Length: 230
Image (cartoon, rainbow, N blue to C red; front, side, top):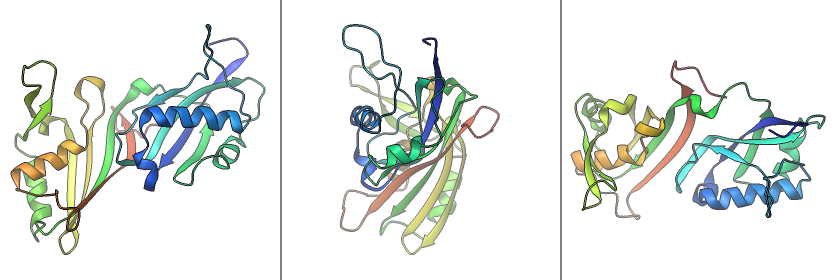
């Protein structure tokens, strides 16, 4: 870190239409917004200096999140309490900065992510929630993309990396699933794997947008000991 700068962390959410922005576009958006909000940040060094931004665990396009994190470096003496308001005035309504603080933890400490998955489908029966909880007590094999095989796919057992999963039928043909899964680099579990497993084992068809819907939202991230990450 360049002398005279301190690291600060922005916690923000992206919901609604914000879930459709890619990580690359989010990076561009934040750089532009920091400039418009006149937040002075440390830049990279070289012929083409750019704001130095470090994101943690970016979510996939289509996934909402209540807990996104971005580290930046600002001058030591700068006031940071008003940064959320300054940024939110320049951000689209579906991306909101929730808080700003000097971090006491490192992104490498993140071990788990918690998601809420809602599924609406005519295939959701009254016992679907119970069957979902039972399913992940045994090996759950899905097809996963890989560069290690000629076909580009491999069989992958999801269940060892699902720390917990609970489900509840909340209305007719509707189930809400809460799951905590591995977020470590070597064993990262995309929440879409859970949906893919349900489609495979329960013959759940989510291809008709007129009768089927599912949403995914990240609601928390945790350290290895279960402590909430901030």
